[in-house]
Length: 214
Image (cartoon, rainbow, N blue to C red):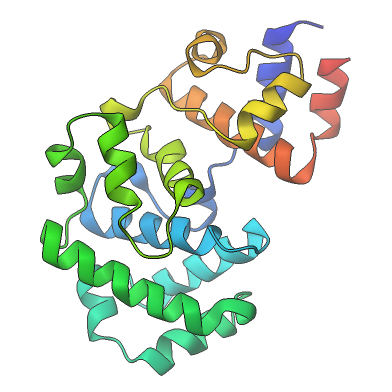
């Protein structure tokens, strides 16, 4: 089988976006969806299984902590309880504090709307640098955010960095965003491909991907 078969197998079997898994709809391009995704990227930055961090992010959404304003108005103990009860026990206190700090920065600098971050940014590097100003989000967290934000934010597309490129190389695909995007069926398909490659790197390729890669 060829590269296109591997790409199709990846998208079909492992291409669920992490944002979708957490119940976040980035395509709606609304402040709450972007703040939730920032929260998820922050939680996923810790040394914890991605599935646990996604579960915790989904719980924040379900508990009404979907905006910077809601987090700032929330009780710290309540944030700790939500995280502790939803797979984030090891980092619940730290996570609760980081979420509050993120909400404060988003509220003060961007009026509670992260779309202003990308509107104010000069280029992709500036977006990454601004994201790293959020306490708890380093280079890895910024990459996590941008991998799926590229679905909407033009300045980021095509974006592929970190573990997904290692997986691409191991599966015989180009380890370069500009080359990978030519194998994807669409912008959404490319975003799903990058998510799938990330899952393949973290969890291992699916059986379908292994068969396609030969």
